[in-house]
Image (cartoon, rainbow, N blue to C red):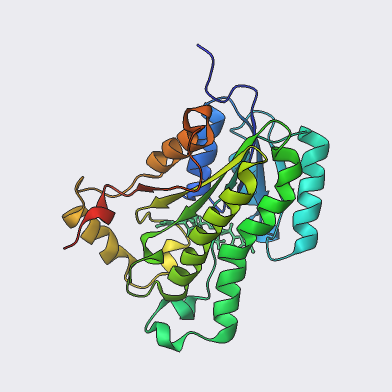
Length: 257
Ligand code: 0WD
């Protein structure tokens, strides 16, 4: 049987370690036959990414700190040289200063707000623009990761919730611009998963307990569940879907109490 992504080429940004959602997505896409490119934010993470990538078939590893336009440009120049065209781009990146993820949103500093928006939200638009020449050749799909805190108040999520609201709105505006270029863009709103970033949010362990108690499926979200949903959204099976946010959260978002 031919694999769902046989002959496809994908880039995933946001692998920090083996717990990263980006890594679960990489495994799902690679498992379906895609050739993978991974990026690392800086020297701190390069070793991790290169070690993980040993499990992949002929991976391309590139530096890309999304706060630097020059790095984004160079990353896609090299990707173009190696891959020629691109089918899938996954944005699995977020950052806020730790002090902004505790206490009241009211205390958010101007700089903290700007950093969270720049890295967690604006970067999607910058990456989509840089990738468009490669994606539009044969049509493609973009995917970004978001969280319930975009539309509902989640204690301590604060400035990241506001950044995720901007990210989700960006997905809709980008879907409108990119549709005529045969590029789809969607989001996955994942339930809480124990990763490096998540542990920076005060009270994260309590969040996991609450989901197990209240969510319709009474269990926490597994990274592989997000990987499988990502595979669907990035494949031709989802060819009629763009501008959508798909919840992969054990159903928690439907609950009122
Ligand atoms: O519960 C969770 N873990 C959820 C995460 C629930 C719902 C959504 N998400 C989202 C996050 O907000 C993020 O968008 O999923 C995405 C991936 O997050 P993750 O897998 O939970 O976290 P992690 O493994 O830490 O990966 C995020 C990575 C960074 O890791 P660290 O921990 O080193 O900050 O984003 C990358 C970096 O690899 N990153 C950057 N990449 C390029 N340039 C930058 C940057 N400037 N800053 C952070």
